[in-house]
Image (cartoon, rainbow, N blue to C red; front, side):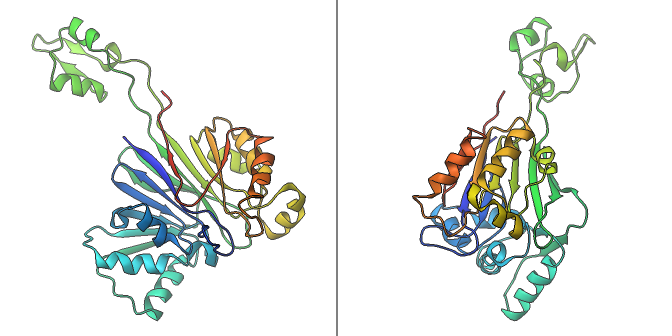
Length: 309
């Protein structure tokens, strides 16, 4: 089952040529989840040829303009295609007011159901087949949320030779054993999955954190992430400014990744517009000094998230 993250925009505060505002799309098979929707989101969706009508949910970190200004256009665009399923929008308090005001002032034509849910308690906000999305609180200048998408564990590898030795005929009974179900043979023998499967295997985890002070509890929320997309807005020499504005440096993001444990890759995002493409290398170097498996995101970069076992 494919799991991929698409960076639709990596910039913070203001869009720049070649750097749209922060937005990440996660695709799990045919289901899409959009994390924030800054200015330029539609452009990257189009250039990546992604089917925006398949977006099941938009998960908003907070209601600062550089994270939500791309959403109204996306809502209107979705009325130009056939859409039968409702669109869910999750976010902190006032996200419902923002969506409703945008619809009213812009006189939007919407021909599908939009369900807005404001999050007041950390925990699971969305559940699908074999996965769940959880929200947790960050520390910014207004209510702000981080998110994880985590898959359930998978059964162990199936060993056909063991099934044959136990007299299980090839076909539907093999599929049931692979799914973790007991099966009964014609002679009444009961075969348990553990007799033909290897050790249980892990699912995958994606985490998204932006616009926050660095604080220790984030590490527990993102622990074990195969891909951790995190704000790296400033270099170390602006740490005091980052603290005042309730943002974090690239090195602080790397420290969270290191402390969390089990992070496969840290992908920095939400750069200050003060950094040109050239001097973004400074952010990367400072982060890699702490957590070597760090990369800089760029608009329309794609990250496949693979199983580790």
